[in-house]
Amino acid sequence: PSAADAQLITRTADFIREKFLHEGSGHDWEHIRRVWQVARRLAAQTSGADLLVTELGALLHDVADWKFHDGDEEAGPRAARAWLTSQQANSAVIDGVEAIIREISFKGLGVPTPMSSMEGALVQDADRLDAIGAIGVARAFAYGGHKNRSLHDPAVPPVSHDSFESYKQNTAPTINHFYEKLLHLRERMNTPAARRVADERHAYMEQFLQQFLREWEGEDVDSE
Ligand code: ADP
Ligand code: NI
Image (tube, rainbow, N blue to C red; front, side, top):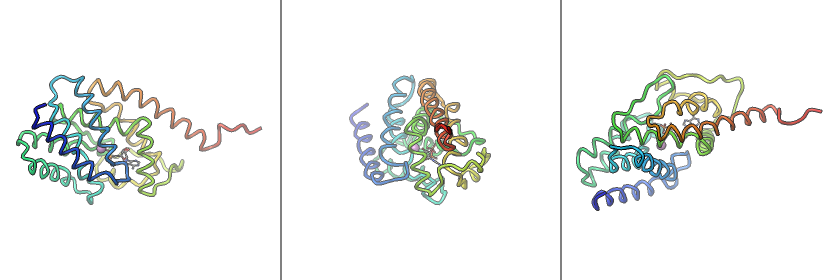
């Protein structure tokens, strides 16, 4: 990247690190840092992706999540545009990053969320890889705890949400989140590079669930 691009990336990383350092809901700086790093690694395996837009998209993708802004889906795109404008980024870069943030979120199993650019495809894959595997398990329970959700309730069946409204209003136990979202992310990866990683993280998560449900009923303990 040019010196100016490298500087813009560094300033954006500093801005986001500062903003997210003390966030405890799973949307912390370390999540952003992992998404940034993984998006860069995926970009290196994918021809034709613009690295500046990919990196800025990764750094800014959670800048103002609807979950923490009264459901306002425009808060994120608006905040990213404001930041990049203040940094005199060129308008094609701003448009590209803004589109990524508008399109990236999961909105329920029944709601397609296609990305309109290669850079967006990479950032969405990186964000979703961070929602599965060992980190994904940890983040799901961190989020559930933050929202006071129970771990599991066998009487509450998983639901496939067909609209963003019903997905947003979901308050089910955290185990349901695996069936309503996390176990489906592997199938929704955009790039072959991410799909390969997702296969391994998915298998790990399935193993976790199997063991969790066995322990839930004490089935791993001999009864005689
Ligand atoms: P995305 O980045 O795909 O939009 P979210 O921002 O919805 O994902 O979720 C961020 C993190 O919080 C993820 O690790 C996700 O699994 C977790 N999370 C979101 N909703 C729930 C929920 N209802 N129960 C448990 N974890 C959740
Ligand atoms: Ni994210």
